Image 1 (cartoon, rainbow, N blue to C red):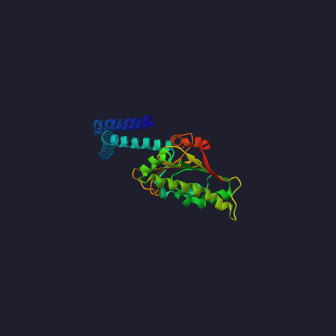
Image 2 (tube, rainbow, N blue to C red):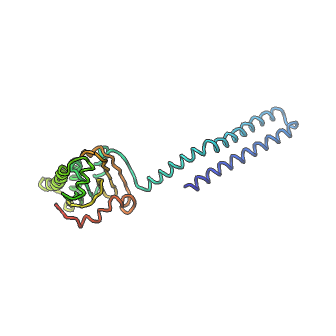
Length: 264
């Protein structure tokens, strides 16, 4: 990108310099052969060439004094845009502003690593509808109750560890109820739909929702309360093998080896 940008700038400068030189040469020749020209032709040619020469001078001033700094800023933003595109970043917004229904209604595989059951409650109806229509695999991963990372996470959130443990227990209960309530109702789940709840001992410091190729990472700030809806969320859409998605979802390879707390 840098080479192409600089090559374009050199081409523009070359055209401006060449045009200015030719215009200046034409003005000199016009003065030399002035006596052989009609007065009106001389006046018209002088005006036109003078304007062209003035434009060339202004263009050079712009290129050397103004556009150089502007080009640096533009190049910076182009590099930034290229980096963002490569990262697969689609959106950065409060978690409550995300269109979860749009993200979930086309899902085939959902993995939720969370410390709070609110997300499941708010999106249960969409998940149930999808699980009725087609095979849907849902995995809910929660930290080991009483583990060292639980205390660190509670401290980060500014809440007691026992309160966080209660919330984790709530996640497990809600996740299991999500599936069993539907199975006991009149509308059955698709036979290929399944849900499992597993325990992990990961010390991540963030929450992750993976919906097929889309990964939503929610960061927790020091002193943050247990209210998750207004936390900043980063939405990535790229292949699981690409960075940074492979960094945020590295734990998924170990899910099958984690202790299963429930499976429906």
